[in-house]
Length: 221
View 1 (cartoon, rainbow, N blue to C red):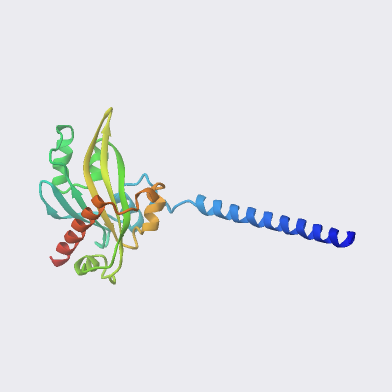
View 2: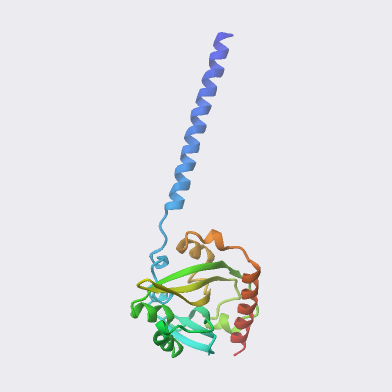
């Protein structure tokens, strides 16, 4: 009886040690996955224009639509393949503190590059990260390199600028990305707090409806 009890005790100890080491292994694996660095093209410090140039070897911008309150632009790479469709909603009033920069942007300048050139600190205040399902966006898919219809990741944020003690919300920007440029997984890599902005709130749903309409309008041109 004593011998059998010792065998049971030994088996329990061995099993406990095995389980402990297994859990340690899983823990180390999880930590390794969480700390795996993002691709250098996904650095949070890069402007979208810089990221396109870094990843695809060139960058250009084409203004597709421009009004006092709205700009739609095509951000493309060195081969003129659309990597981002950017929809910019300007505020009703443009503060005189950045009116010069705004004029440069209205005339075709790339938003981030213009403000960076003029010494502004740039920050993106996140609103939403998600994906737009496959839809009737034939021209957009065509400009994205004649790609097959596909879901497209989207990032909506407030573009904030600061110089000295003064901070302003310049515009709300919605960026729709080519799948080979930025996926939703990539956006989560760039933005460590992305999990907090995945919900389609009533405001986001309203914004997405407008964005999809603009995407279809651009696809019909």
